[in-house]
Amino acid sequence: MKPESRREFVDTWGAMGAVWGINRSVARVHAYLMTSDDPVSLDEIAERLSISKGNASMSLRELRAYGVVRHSQTPGDRRDFYVSEPDAWTMFFRILAERKKRELDPAVAAVHAVLEDADAKGPVRERLGQIADLLASMESVARRLLDNPAAGRAALKLLAAVPRLPSRRPRSR
Image (cartoon, rainbow, N blue to C red; front, side):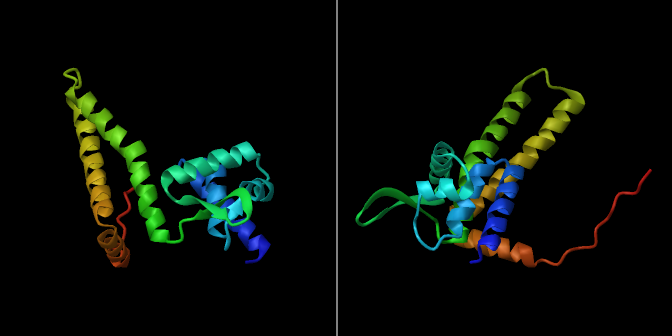
């Protein structure tokens, strides 16, 4: 891979991660490992991405928590090396599971707690009920995708193949 192509991918993946609520350094480290053929040391990651070893270490810890990066040993070398999960679909489902646990599940619980509050009435209760319904639908879809990743993969590919309907744009007032 050409160094400039790799650099562009790392920077783009970092920017995308930041938009999705992932620390930019975490996303850049992930991208660097995804574009590496061989296990990579902490020192190399820090040097190539121009980040501190502490930042690289914390990023690797986060990626390991997501299950998309694993620790690797190189015979004859005492340093720690890291490799990315080789399968993109496995990576996707592991990230989905972790994001569901960290973000969606607490949001569902918070909305239900507010709806149990007797003071929530009228339009506010209606709006929160709609949010609860939306989050329940998202949670159900995520659970189904995660319960059977092979079926989830097939469902996502099927959904991607569905022809787009003409959009109905709201009329301006």
